[in-house]
Image 1: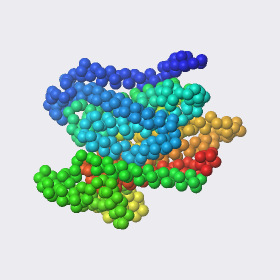
Image 2: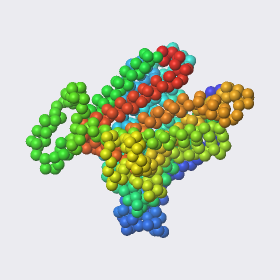
Image 3: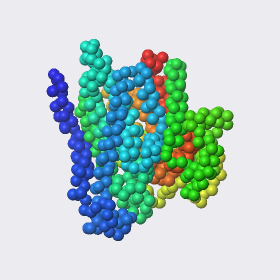
Image 4: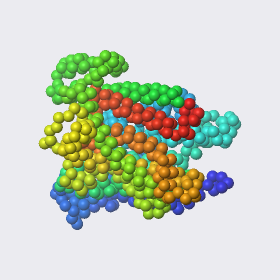
Length: 284
Length: 335
């Protein structure tokens, strides 16, 4: 390897050579395409009452209908949209806040580091659900606050990773050289340190998408997101739980949908991590 | 060593205090007013003002905080719930043991199962036991616990769900550690009923920790099995089982113990979803309901307890880690 030009194709080739990247990537593609093409795939409008309530599966309604008579298959398909949106928004919040805080903590060290890391400790001392609940209640129940809350409880993950990467990187010769050449801390952070953070953050964000999807579904399962008509997997599971004896099996489709989406992001994240970190691959 | 522990202990105390203060302020910043909620739609404004004045909730938050600290210092009590005639201490004494028993039961499943799976995966590295265990671990961390709970309830319809004992069973007890207490008192019928109620929730809750322990056990064993002393042990003719269980596993156990401890902390504070699926009367559901009603004393008392448990546990783990690992004990940072 002579430089980054030749390093990058190696990483991509390694990533594509691993089975988990392919499998996970396939799950993620199916999931994203379902979300994007929901109107084409769903046989009915997910919010309209199209049949009797609690109808059993039939040719007209492959998965039957829910308590109000809405088509379940259409609701599962449309559910991918909210789940994907919530995952992406909350991970973006977590990456932006966490990476900024972590980079500052690692780069400036001393008091800045101590202050930021103590704040993170405090955040971790709370149960995540409670933090999310406080945020959502404060901002009035709804999807926006839920995404923000899930983003917030995932900040520590990114903050710690970025901080530890920055701590390692800033001792490397080329960073010291840039500083010695008179580059300001803003320039060093953006042009010298930031590029090294991309790889670990991409891996963590991929894995984080899975976690965020789980957490969003969990909050809406608990009913924290408030009353909704929009189809969402977590609240569909809650409806199934409330009528367990008669139609517990209706939990299968939304539950499997969440599980597959999360498995996809976890596999993809593992594959990317192995590709980006050759040492890890050697050990395995 | 002493200085290291002292420094960590001070930090832990500080973290607990800040977490408590944050909860105290945050719960009062919520838009819903508990007094209005309790008096209902037909509240007379004067009545509400008078109640707020009586409780001191119309004062500035910093003032309320100081008043509360003085109160706690004087009486050692966390106050009463605003919605139920129950002291916060009693509410926590009722719900915390339920969460502790659930968590411990889940870990009792997760740790042995995770270690067996992880060791098997490492020993038969890149063969079918490895693939099977890793696929299982992937599913374990990916399937939502509330979905797993529903599946378990549908699959085992004859198992009890909801609560910790059958409604018909009355049983005098002095603590809410039902399983533990009934076992100590020799009340086998109560213990059996309580264990039956505990089965499914604990199984559901154990999915993530089992997967996490299995992954750590596998990678930790792989590291150790590749080490020179293991090769030496093999070369001198030790039996394969002896190499795995006598030479490798003890040395691979430190990261496993650490991750199990971390999971304990996570579960104690994070069993809300499992408790909700199985109507388990634990602390998670207690606190979530309290936040939704803005029951100030319950929320701040609960957060205080959770923070103390979590922070103390992490402190204990840090210390244990240093004690167990001679390399850390002699590292410059530990002195």
